[in-house]
Image 1: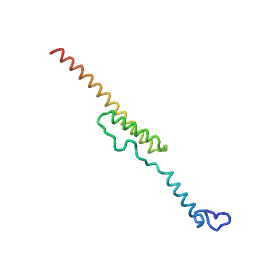
Image 2: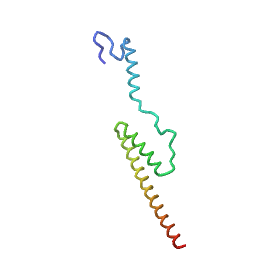
Image 3: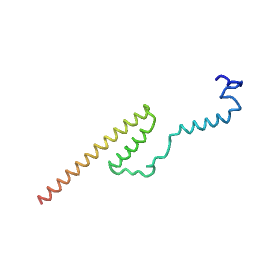
Image 4: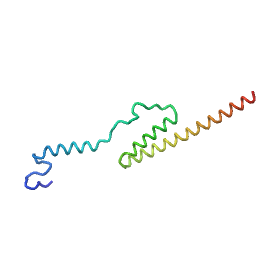
Length: 111
């Protein structure tokens, strides 16, 4: 860097600006922080397809808050793929329950 006006030092090396540089480093470090605890931390139980879909929905929403990047888009594609699979499983589960209910009714009629 070029020396500051009226100084033999540049901004990075001027001893008089040591405090200013330290504050700038702290401010820069704080703005880059993204990690924060999830509101779901420690409270997630996955026992049904709906539970899994709720978790994936939460993960998608938090991922969408990140800056756009190839990594973020890959994560979103993966979440969407898993969510689609969860929807398929939930639909199949519902269809099986309906078929089982019909089978029970038919067996009760024939008895």
